[in-house]
Image (cartoon, rainbow, N blue to C red):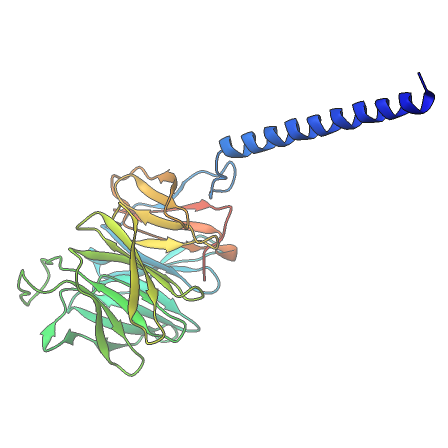
Length: 314
């Protein structure tokens, strides 16, 4: 055989084999990617840690810029502070208007759903004084502000379901409208959602202009777009699960709470995993600690933490 022809045939054989191997290798990668398990949001090897279980019912956690967490023990009418560095717990404010949901607004205030008299409060972190922002709409008292989220322009969105409290000295009619409200910085109150059974947990993404609201009464969570004027548009069913409280991480995964613990959904609404909490009911959740990479969980009489792979959205 001509030497040149022999070399040409050898080159063709080697090239064909390489292409076939590359294709097989690519198929293996594609197959592996399709079957790979999603990476957990929890730090590898991390376990749930009980911080304390000496409360009556814990709720409303929010973290300041240093990762210190403020949460409520509503039946005992107190706000408790969790120190991010020492893990020390201290009674921070009592009485506190029977505060439920809280939200930190930099640099020095908490927005509180003060349930004793169905009010929204602003609490000064320096001197612990408070002022009532709003207590009624259209001439009627709120049913009981429950949870809140504050936009970067300090506009407050809050849920107003109705859970009749034994400590109320006033009466709220059973047919009192349930809703979600927007409180502007000039004090104007606008109802932005009026068609939910029992709105509860709420959280927003100020960068992407989106807001999630849980209808715990209908076991659904919805996502809305925040319009330029602050109204809510383009409602979409996010998942078939309600929630007491909620939070977001930097990957825009959504964390919902309930009987199983903390259930995590991807940004497109697919269930990723559940962080089991052994209390029968988990009320609320936020990111605190160093770098806001510690999930802080309130569950009945207890609070827990667990180190996370991903940090909380600020």
